[in-house]
Image (cartoon, rainbow, N blue to C red; front, side, top):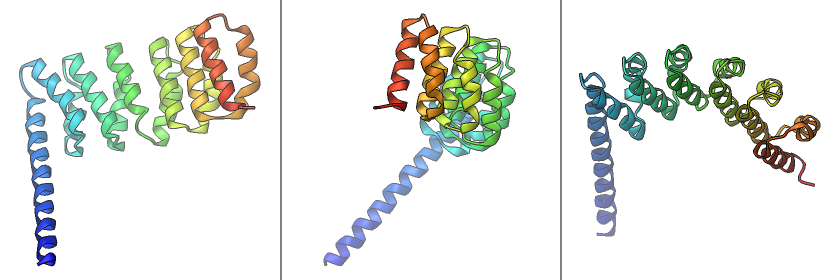
Length: 212
């Protein structure tokens, strides 16, 4: 009897799990269809909701949505691709870095920061030289999260950027990477820095790198 109860319970669990998977797949298919809707707001909602589902089945359709005529669709498509984190999205996201809309470009940088790979690192290091401070700042944060040591020297350069937000992001990135080679440079920069917020970030980083 006890064995029968265990078998029955296991069967119910499997059936419930299967039902959840089926329901998610069905919902994903519905949202994928809405990415082609004539109404831009329906497409925006679909791209946003697919970010909650994070279903790999939607990847190629989200890549197509990166070319949508409405910038907010492109923004949410980029963000969702970053959440899914599949390397298939790297090349399309790199192409999106040339989008005419700066917010689309910045969300593409954020998305790349969630997908590990050699091309990702090289691309984000290149973005540190972008003319737009927002792009450089997001690239620095993304490099910090990825933690690849190839980004250390470029981040040292970025920590002297004329824009305070870029300097702050570069400081945070180096702190996340925990590279003690940063300490002498950071101490010099702390003496030169005038913005209190950036000073605070540098001190926080120095404490992390030199706890004694």
